Image 1 (cartoon, rainbow, N blue to C red):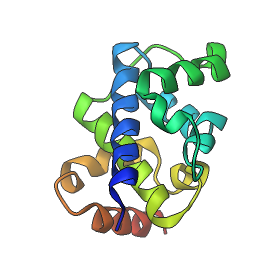
Image 2 (image 1 turned 180 degrees about the vertical axis):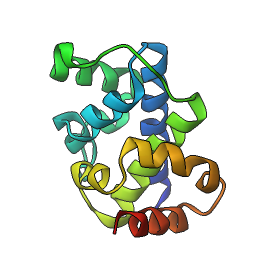
Image 3 (image 1 turned 135 degrees about the horizontal axis):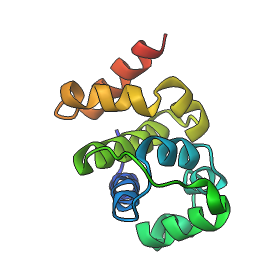
Length: 135
């Protein structure tokens, strides 16, 4: 079970994924680039200033890190993006797995497909199901 601070961090990452939509970034590549980035790795540390800077600052850090790699294109829905970002963060805090390892197990396409059936169930159960899908 996550504590209230970890849940707040999950919420911030969910809002970060949503914010990528307003900037016009293509959802699948945004998710992959973020989850494999130094920004995501730093966000998952025990304590890092990025955790409390908010989603706008996080996105600015990511843009600085990735420069021209972020592209415009097809986007997932706002609800899907929030759930994916939140779930990936929850997964990290639950298991201590790195963002890179998590996205290898559950790709953006897998998460998008899983959203319809999993976004209303208990988060720990959803993560267990997603881990089973990866096997």
